[in-house]
Image 1 (spheres, one colour):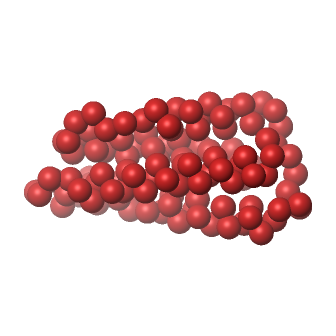
Image 2 (tube, rainbow, N blue to C red):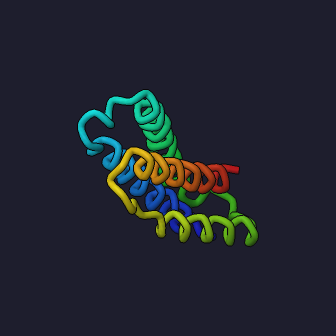
Amino acid sequence: MELQDRIQALQAALDKVNDALAALDNAPDGLAATAQVDAQHALLDSERQQLGFEIGNLQMAIGEVREIEPDVAARIQTLSAELGRIVVREATVTAALDFANAVLEKASDIRRQITG
């Protein structure tokens, strides 16, 4: 997996994390202020920061970063595809939290796979 592919995978994950944050931010009144939503928001915000940090590091390291093993690259592609298929099906806290959890899991996996 080329460095630019790694950056693009992280950027796609970051975009999905931002989508999940927006879904939580736009939860119906009364639902957006629950402790579970607040906790999920904090986790997603942390992941967003970590993804941004890793993207910046990889962009600065162009030409200096080792190649990723083919099996890890395949796993990253699978995780990216799974992340791309996640959609919000209902406008409920449960759906928003499930969406956010799924995005957080896949985005974190992508970041961990890329950063070793």
